[in-house]
Image 1 (spheres, rainbow, N blue to C red):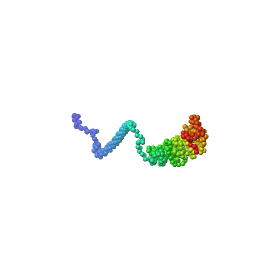
Image 2 (image 1 turned 45 degrees about the vertical axis):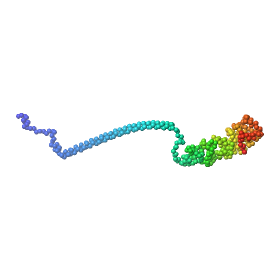
Image 3 (image 1 turned 90 degrees about the horizontal axis):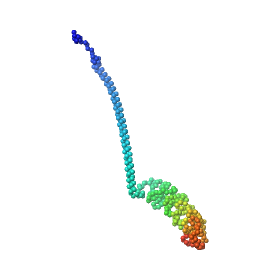
Image 4 (image 1 turned 120 degrees about the horizontal axis):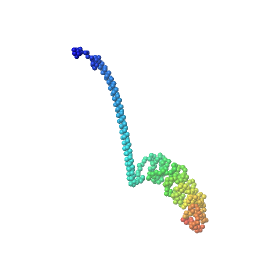
Length: 368
């Protein structure tokens, strides 16, 4: 027999293939309860993996956003810095050109002013400020204690403002600080003397002083009882020409001849002082006359029985007998000259009457 036929006649049982699913597996696969549990387990596991992946993605996204935000912030800072730098440059350029324009404008204005007529300060009307402590005839006070002391003339006054005295020109609205001492004055008396204006400062207590209003300075100390200010009075008879240089004052019972330039006393006498040419005379109560030279040095005493004359700057002192002495302004006796020869030519007994009747000889007033 053919072996092939034998094989066909006795078939061999087939072995299950390894890929075939076993009955148990089928049962398990077909068991719905097992499938649900397995599915649930796989879903839980899958969800856990998905959630972990999402959180990681969120964190990465947050990191990316933070980094992007930082990059944007840095870009903004860089832009702001650049903008500030540009702004600073623009400002510097603006200031530079503004300075150039200002200088140019200043030059133009000054050139215009220089080419026009200058306006005097008095022509410019300055706005009047309200005085904090009020005004005294236009003067603006700077202290609560402020009042007028006296009138200098129709346009000027003296004002005491606090502890100082001011001269105020009402027409020009100008005040000038004086050196008048800070005292309470019974009176400040204004008078004209020579070519200047003076004031007698008479305090509430003590003696008076002389002040030159024109030159704004004090002449004497407070050491005088009276100043003789009437040039037409007997005090200045025959010597009115001294007003520009001297004034007579009284201290106690004696008169003093005051030098107006220095305030010093040149001559003093119990009864009277007198000036002629460059000779100065002091009249005493004993009837004598003390004579001072041009340097205010006493060089002679004229007795009561002698008569004095001045001519050609010579001082002639003659006795009742007719004898005489001649002096120069230095106080020295004059040397022989034509003038003395002329006097000697007059008879001795007639000499005194001749000089008294000759108006060219000025007779020094007698001490009566």
